[in-house]
Length: 371
Image (cartoon, rainbow, N blue to C red; front, side, top):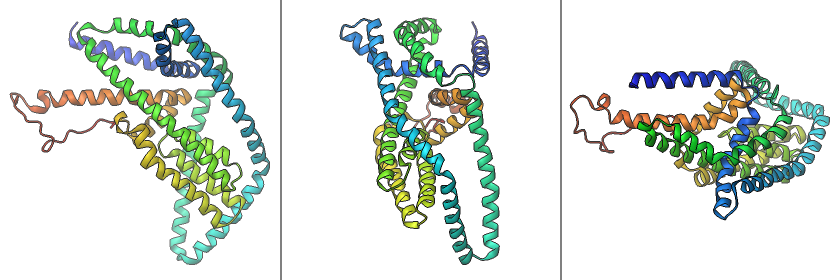
């Protein structure tokens, strides 16, 4: 088969896969979630096999332990969250009134110190761009809800995901061996090397970022609760989950904690304390947690991750969010591979220029989207 026919074949296959993904996006959530869980549990199953356990028993033991731990965590956390959410909904009118009073006083202080024309421009800008931001966020959340929760609801995640995860984990080695046998023989070694790089990038990022989310969630929940903020547990846990998107978790913690402190206490000292807690968490995350737990080795830039998650959520709802990081890792690895080949090709060097010296001090190689 000629090169043009190979390219045509893979392009058509990719378009068909994207079309099926779009058509079936509403029912793919439990299957994508099960695939993600099986992917990260496979090393543990391989370790049990090395210790003499059969694949069936290894899969059964790991799947049962994992989901029992997940259920235990939910049973411990969900009642507390439900109680705090009930109290929050009951006290919400009072919080809104208190927050409005605090904002009104703050605006009056600012208005007294800022010229009237400048204050009017600031107020108009906040009104315009704030309204656009809220409308965009509402559209995004609505798309995620309709795309991810309409058909693939919570019950499907609870009942379908464990079953699919069990069968995927049991047959994981067989499936990878079968796919390996389907690779085009001429390029099999190159494809395997790119898959290994994708595996290192994806596993390193998700494992490291997961530890960052857990650390930040515990820190925010404990710190905000000790600071006297009601519903600090809810704010901390949500901020920890959102920390999977770089900077978004800390931004949510900052806005939510400051708003609740202003509504509950109505003084700048309380707001300053919770803001200080969030800023300390962001400083520790940026200077210690992320460099140590995630590091530069995964080569997934924060902006690239944010774009991938927002694009995935907009296009495919919750399914797109689950697929965003793997797709970002794949695109990043393939982009760097294509860039390396371009820098070694006649297109970059020029025809007949076979003695180009690649000196890092003289030629700076551009980086791909994942870096």
